Length: 352
Image (cartoon, rainbow, N blue to C red; front, side):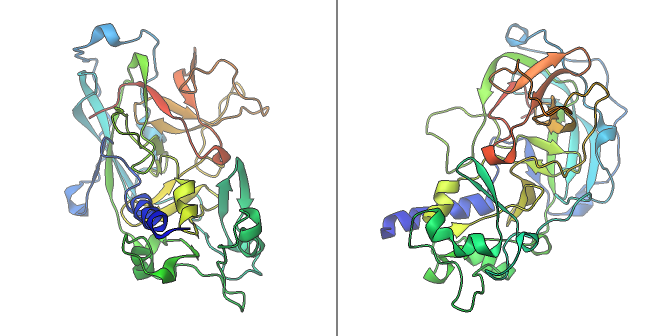
C-alpha cells in the first residue's frame, strides 16, 4: 500500500471518527448542559402549518410524532419549538436534546483484548454483506479473511493492538498519524467522550412528491450532489441512527472499527451512535404483527424494523423503504446491520 493511499485513509478515518454527521444535519452540539432546561414541553402542538411550497407536497398522510415514546430523563429532554422545514413550511418541531447514552443495553464491548478471547469479549464487524463476531480468532485471521498479508493486529504474545486511552483514540484518528496506529482495532469508550446534541424533528411530517438522497458522510459524498442529512433518525433512547461507515477507507488504513452487539460505537465528537438495527434498542411492538417501531426518522416519519413478527419483509416498499397503512400512515422500514445502512433517502421534509 503506497504512502499517498495510507495518508488519504487516515484523513478519512479521522473524519469518520470525529464527524459522523454531515453539515446539512438538523442537529446542534451543545457543550454547556445548563443551556438546556430539561423540560418536557410536548403539549403546544397546534394545527398551524404554513407551507410556501404546497405544490411539492404529497397528500399521503403521516402520523404525528409521539414524544411520549422517547426515554426522557437525565439523558434525553424534549421541547416544542417553531421551525422551518427544507421546503419552506413553517411549523412546530420537537427539539430533542440527547447525550447519546443507551439506557436499555450495555454500550460495548468492541475490540477483544487477546486473540484467545471469545465473542463475548468483542463486538461485531460488518463487511462483504455479512456480520462477523469480532472475537480473537477473527482478529488473528484478518490477513486470510481479506487476502492481505499486511494485516497483523496483534502482538506475538496474542495481545490485540487496540486503542486503550482517550489520547490514543484522538491521536489514532489524526491525519498526521504515527505508524504505531496502523494495524490497530479502533475503539473509543463512552466515558472518554461527553457530548450533548440537539435535533429538530417536525411534529407533523410532510411527505414530498420526490425523494431526496441522504448524505453518506464526508468520505463518501460526491461533489455537486445536493444531499439531505447524514443522520437518519433517532432511537427512542435519543441515540442517533447514523450514516454508513466507510468500510473501504477504514480497511485501507489496516484498521477495524467494530460496533457492539447493539450496532453502535463511539467517536470523539458525537459519542455513541448506531450504524445498524440489531433488535437491542427500545421497540414498540405492533398489535397486528407488523414490524416493531424503533424510532423516528429526522423528517418525522416512523422508523420500523426490517422484518415483521413472522420474519417477513414488506413487499410494497418504495425507493426510500417506505409505505403506508391505515394504522401507521407513511413510514419507513430500516435495513439490517449487514447492509451498513438504515435507509438512503427521505420522502419527508426535514427541519433546517
